[in-house]
Every structure is written in C-alpha cells, then in structure tokens.
Length: 204
Image (cartoon, rainbow, N blue to C red):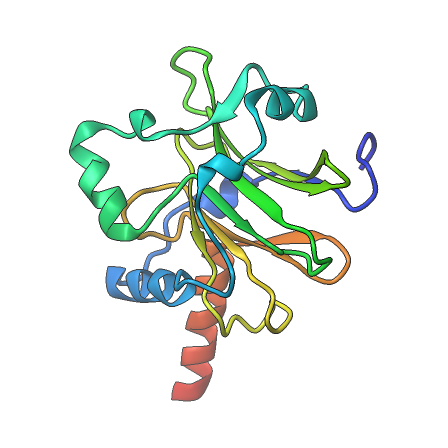
C-alpha cells in the first residue's frame, strides 16, 4: 500500500466479515473468552499512552482522533465493560524488539456517524513515538483485551491484542499480532469459522 512507512499496516475491515455467525452463542462466548486471557507482560495504565498531540500528529488522516474513555460507554453498559475486562489501552512488547509498544482504542468526535472508532499501535524508541499499525473497523466503539496464550497463529511467547467492537461477547472482533515481519489481524468471524471446521472434521 502506498504512503505507509516500513513495517506499517493500515487496513479497513471488509463489511462482509462483520456479519453474524449463524451458530450457537455459547461457542462464540467460549471462543472469545479463550482468546482474551491476559498474556505475558501486558499492562493497561493509560498514563503511558502517547499524548493527544502525538496521536493527532501520527494519524493525520483522522479528524480529531483521541483515546476513548469511560465517558464513551453508555451508563447502562459500564458494568458489562468491567465484567468483560475491557480497556482502551494496552502496553507491551508486541513485536519482540525489546521496546514497549502501545495499543490504543480511539474515538473520533464528528457527529452521529457510527464509524467513529479506530485501533492503533504506537512504539517509542530514542524518545520518539512512531506509528506501527492503524485499523478503522467501521464500529461506533472499540475496546481492547490482551490475547491469551495458545493461539496457534501468534509466535510463541509474544503478546497480542483482541480488539472488540461489541461489549458483549460476539464474533465481532479482530485479533492483532506481530507475525515476525509486520502486524497482521484475523477476524473473529474467520477464527470461529475455522474452529467450526475443525470441530466438524473431528466429528467425521
């Protein structure tokens, strides 16, 4: 893709991948819970996130980007967010270079458009922030969880990120991870479809 610095990924989800999976809710819930178990040295202290001015400078194509906050969550869903262990910031060495990387769930302040959120990963080296990844999911709100150990597609011992686009468990999420060369993501729809196929094969 043009206009991207080396190692950077910038993607927009295909809307077809965000449709509902016609399977029992129990499997969706179980699969999300299996993924989103705390992994390694990942922390969620937003005081270490890049300043607002840095976020705006590194995301120039977005209109007034900022970190999402609890004020963006409806009052009647605040407890659900706490129960699910969802946050707007995760810090860890996601790409294995020995430097702290920061994943943020952000928000755009521009009226009633439902496409108001983004996920970005920033890294800091030699005192300078740089952008490593940005995703516009087409969702009103995005929250984060650390990726649990055991995902076969993530290099061993490397933390990853679950970006969820609903507060309640669903297939509407992506898993973001470093594959050894660049940041990649897998959609919840695809992961659950693969899980169903594996279950069918075992049942044959």
